[in-house]
Amino acid sequence: MINQTVQKALNEQIQKEFASAYLYLSMAAHFEHENLPGLAHWMKGQAKEEMGHGMRIFEYINERGGQVVLGAIEKPDADFGSPAEVFQQTLEHERKVTASINALYELAVKEKDYPTQIHLQWFINEQVEEENTAETILEKIKALDETGMHPLLIMDAQLGKREG
Ligand code: FEO
Image (cartoon, rainbow, N blue to C red; front, side, top):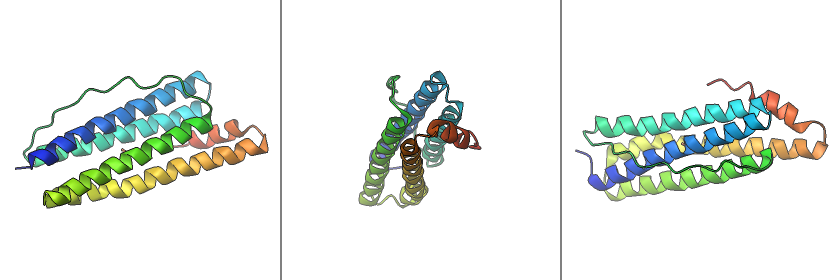
């Protein structure tokens, strides 16, 4: 049987993952509205990934004989700034998610919940990738901005190639 304190924190993490999906979907809607379909495509892919993260924890709680209790998801922002500002916000958001995963891991250590520690290792690795990806895209957008040469169209074409 899963530790109840850990279960509560895992349920909260499911909520955070789906809230992330909703935030990125809102960013996708913003890019669609700005006629940047490549950036929108990338954000839609990101939203799907976040739902996948939430589902990993959902399935894990059930495997451990626990109970999934879903929390409310707040309305995300609808107005975003320039693409650089959107990716700055994405990076900051991912840093918060990393802190949340790390706190969850620390709790699993404190509660001597070894299976949860192992399960969370995937998320710890994933957060390294998530932060790195957001930072790389942000830096590319900033560099393209400085050239003054249709930066967004180049970036839009690149991000439009995302698979999955
Ligand atoms: Fe689920 Fe972007 O971390």
